[in-house]
Image (cartoon, helix red, strand yellow):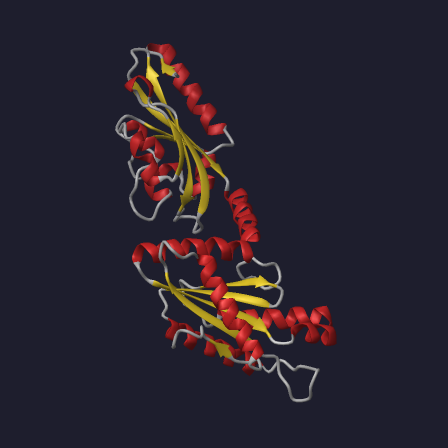
Amino acid sequence: MPRLMDGASANGERAFAHQLMEMLAIPVFVLDTSCRVMIWNRACEHLTGVPASEVVGTREHWRSFFDEQRPTLADMVVQDRAGEIPSIHPRQGYGIPSGQPSHVSAESWFDMPRVGRRRYLAADASPIYDERGRLAAVVETLRDLTAEKMAQIALEQLAIRDGLTGLANRRCFDDTLQAEWSRALRQRQPLSLLMVDVDNFKAFNDANGHLGGDECLKRIATAVASEMRANDLVARYGGEEFAVILPNQSLKGAASVAERIRTRVEQLQVPNRLAAGQRVTVSIGAATALASPDTSASDLVATADAALYRAKHMGRNRISLPQSEPA
C-alpha cells in the first residue's frame, strides 16, 4: 500500500504528488484523517462545478455531490466504515484485509447540485499510510460513466419495450405477471387481467396497408395506456392483441376498466374502410383470480382468453367476463 515518508524528502514527495494530482485529467480529491479536504484537483472542479478554494480545509465536500449530507467513499475509509457501503452504494467492491481500511470502489448516481444535473459516477478510494503503518490520507478518484449508464438503460428498455407502440413487450408481460401472481399469493389479494383484441384487424390492415395498421395500433395503445393506474401494466401481447395486468383489482373493477378502454377506443373514431360509417373497435375479455398454490398465472391468462373469445363470438366491440363469475 502507498506510504508517506518523513522529513524533508517526505515534503518533496508530497509537493510532487500534489502537483501530479493537480495535472491529472481524472477528478481526484484527498482527505486527511479528520475528513478534511487536502487536495481538490482541477478535474474535480470541472466535474462538480465547485472550486478548490471552497472545499480545501473543510469537511463540506459532500455538498459537491449530494443534496443531503452523506459520506463519500473516502469518508467511509477514513472512518473505517467500509462495511456500510452496500447500504449507500448498491454496486460496490471492497475488502478489509488485516483489519485495516483498504481500497474500495462503488458506482452510483450523484446529485451534483452545483452543476444542476445528476451524474453516474464510478468512485475509487484508496488509503495512504505513513512509514509506521498509520493512516495518513485517503485518495478518491472519480470517473463519469453517465453516457455509458444511459446507453445501458436504453438497451434495457429496448429489451422490455415493444418497438412499435412503446408499451411493455411480451417478455416484460410474462415476467410481470409471474411477479404479480407471487405477490397476490403472499398478500392474498385479487389479480385481474384484461385481454384486448382489435376487431377485424387483418382486414383493416389489408385495406389500409401496413403503415395504416401500425398507426392504428399506436393510437389504440395510447388509448389503453391512458386508463392505467401507476401500478398497472399494459403490454402488447402479440400482433393486434394487448394485455392489461391489474394488481389488487376485483372483477367488478376490471370490468369497469375494460368498458372505459372499449369506449375510449370507439371514441378515437379510426375509420374502417370495410364498411361506411364503421369505426375501429376492440373486444375485451376480463378475468380475476385469488392466487393459490393450486392455480397458476397461466390459468388466469386462459380464463381471460376464453372470455375474449366469447366477446368476439357475441358480435365484437364488447367486454366479456368469465361465465361462472358475476361482475
